[in-house]
Amino acid sequence: MDVVSDAIAAARVGQPSSNRVRVGGSWCARLAPYDGAGFHVVLKGDCWLLPDGGGAPISLRTGDTVLLPHGTGHVLADSPADAAAVSHAVPFESWREQAEAVEPPGDAAPVELLCGKYRLDRSRAHPLMTELPKVVHLPHRVGSHAELRAAVELLGSELDARRPGSCIAVPSLLDLLLVYMIRSWMDEGVTGAWPGVLNDPVTTTALRALHTDPAAAWTNERLAIEAGVSRPTLARRFTGLVGRPPMAYLTWWRLTLAATMLRDTTEPLATIARRVGYGTPYALSHAFKREFGTTPGHYRARTAEPSAA
Image 1 (cartoon, rainbow, N blue to C red):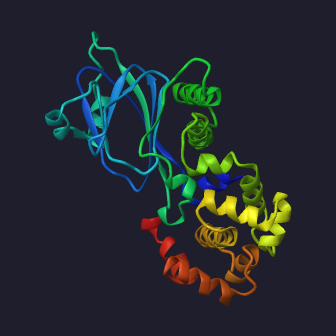
Image 2 (image 1 turned 180 degrees about the vertical axis):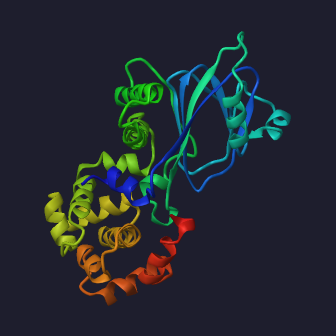
Image 3 (image 1 turned 90 degrees about the horizontal axis):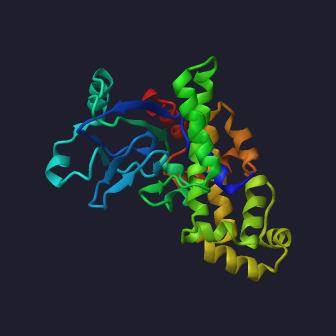
């Protein structure tokens, strides 16, 4: 197991959704804040993204991708619109319907966008995900982010042709796109806690061990041996980078996994407890309520409601 995959899997809910839009001329559309993550891929043309909160307008060109990992509200427009224009932006849903119904003027360079959302459960967000900036802009540059560019090209091909199996291929490619966007962000040499964590061999080895077998009877001594360092060295490096001691992180991760299984499976509580390293359902229930403020049974019932599906 690896931390990035687990961080994404823990928070992901359901399948991503996406819409392809082709538009030209003068336009301005608002996307409201969303309890998940938004993304845009510029398949053709140029446009601008204006994040809520007064951030600088971001120029987007063909091949660019943008991830809004915290669901930040924003505006997409044909130009870096002023405040007055932004305040009158059309809601994205209405704008999309209008854009699909009207062919762009012949003298206007059309813009084609793939816009979509990943549904996330913020209560299970891994620190790696919470550390992402509100806008991750990954410009298309020759020689960089080859995997991300390949995923964008495959998406464009699938959306152009709609061949047999596309109903499986497109959601799978969107999942791959999320992984590549986060990986590309980390490859950009950004500063922060989690890029530092994943570049530290001792901490990475310890995290990999905990994620691979969270139910094991881990102790600081056993984890230090696994990482090939002394207990004090492991404690200092792990706590300094991750922000909590190894055993505290393990407890949090076990409970996050339990929440994922409660939501996504019908496994009995005793089975879940055993799989995440708790000796009895009672022990898991006690720790779960302390972490999430509710019992496992209530959590499962709430997350199984249609409104949360």
